[in-house]
Figure: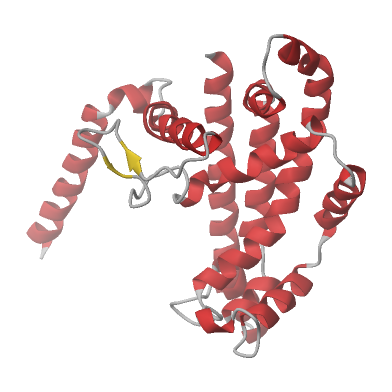
Length: 277
């Protein structure tokens, strides 16, 4: 028994040493995988998608990866990869600062008002939409993780748009006229303005992440808090507290806090690396 544990411990130590040896530049240096992946994989995909859509074409085939492959079928495509859905949301706040159209002021007021959107109201609205008698009941996604993602997305969307819009207004006043004089259309000014205000984008991401990871009411309503399926750490904390198991609830709370702090720290390091480039 002792020899078996010793062998397992030696295997674990060897695996750690081998990993650190291979990736020593990342462990002891300032490089990060996230920047490499975004610059070499995700950003080109996004640029390809934007170029095709701006010409009124559907991005069916991505020719720049090996011999090419189907764009809609790519797991890491900028359209269908969950993390890169931010590419579709972040420009909305900047677009509100760039474009002038009837009802723009009212739309800005509504977006800012939705920052305080009650989660239980969102959960109830999504429940009514996805229930069997609702308009989207045919999809059968109520009490599934998909329904939870929909509710969390609705809650996070106003936060991202509002927090991106506020700094974008200042950047538009400072640089917008110069970009237009240089021949850029209002559509093409959105990406440079987002690049200038990338610190604000990071803040918007962290705020939306915090809203989503801390959500309880909406996801209990649409997810059902089903064990091993739709139960999250926040709903588990609420459940264990109601059962009186405070030690487990406290332990889950500590893990959730550590997870949130880790994501925030990695995001800040990532933002600092981008700023220094």
